Amino acid sequence: MTSAPVTATPATPAPVLPATALAIVGNPGHRRVTLFQAALRSAGLPPARVVPWAEVLTGMARFRPGEAVRIDSPGEDTYVDGLLRGVSDSTRVEGGARWYASFLAAVDRVAVEVRAAGGTLLGEPAELAVLFDKRLCHAALAAVDVPVPPSPTSGAGAPPVRGWPDVRELLGEPGLRRIFVKPAHGSSASGVLAVESAPGGRLRATTSVERTPSGALHNSLRLRVHEDEATIGALVDALAPDGLHVERWLPKASLAGRSADLRVVVAGRATHAVVRTAAGPITNLHLGGRRGDLDAVRAAVSLAGGDWPTALRICERAAAAFPGTPCVGVDLLPAVGWRRFAVGEVNAFGDLLPGLTGLPGGPAEGLDTYAAQVAALTGARPGSLPPSPIRPGRPPRASSGRDRTTVTTRP
Image 1: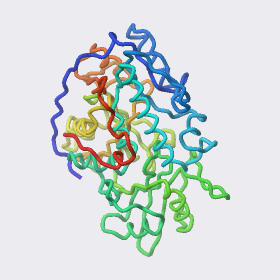
Image 2: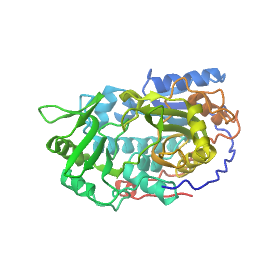
Image 3: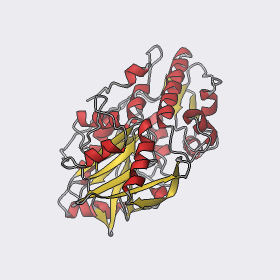
Image 4: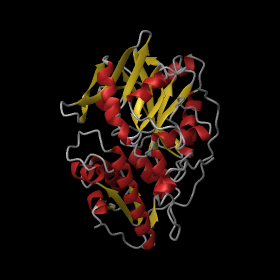
């Protein structure tokens, strides 16, 4: 893992708004849509027209001539989740591969229909295909020299993980005694296992997954620790059909006695950062993680002889691998000692951080993540990049399943 300096050179394209009417593909009334609408209102702009994900997935959505269309997350809606994953219980973990295929097919349809109406899509479908496959995303980051945890499953050509025997074998390889096993198309730590092996064959796995007597897997808001190989193996075997990504578990720096990482929001430039701390390896806030003190992190980096601006530039370089995606959330992993950093994941919808204002001295100082994106769209603030839209008449990439298996890297 290295932290080589990187230079980001934000440009200032012509603003998309307010000359263009805006539509959001999202779930009406849900937090993401509500917060974005509030940001528009605060900027003195009219509300966006909401195109429900339910209408997109059932073929009822229509797009108007000349609209700029923002695609937001389809999450936090039980009915929409059922349409995507084919399960009726929103706590179920299974169905990731079906979710991925259904989501990408829907995004491609939106792109075609927006283009046919002469509108502009604020995002790139081909990049979503990579961002929502952890194996492809890892390879795309490594290809542009973003420091990432070593992984035996990175890229389209890597051998698939078919079940627990494959994971057990990987645990015996050099450097893989401690690993994360992640559903390839998962999010919010759904289905993730942090697995440790020790001499004598002892195992320990930390996960939020709960397996019922029927064999079904459910997400829980409580982390569990398993030390029985049969239990751990059964979980991995149940997750494997949807695809798995494996990477080395990098020891993270600590803050006030707790392991720490950061979610950094990047829209051309790094605009927001939140520290997440936990007693164990999984820091997600909804699983018991706590927000940490960003000033304390910056002080720790400085005291260790590290460089905080370099850490932010690593996040910007990770985001630059996806130039057609207007805003991403980068999970930044500080190594023990606070001198080196790696990128764990890049999240296409990683901007839901209510109440968090921009980095001091940065392009979004004083703005929340949604207000910063509205400012970028209108050109009201310099430094934060508007998206690279799909122009009318330009066909969307990744329009077939075969295309989605190819990683396209970009400088």
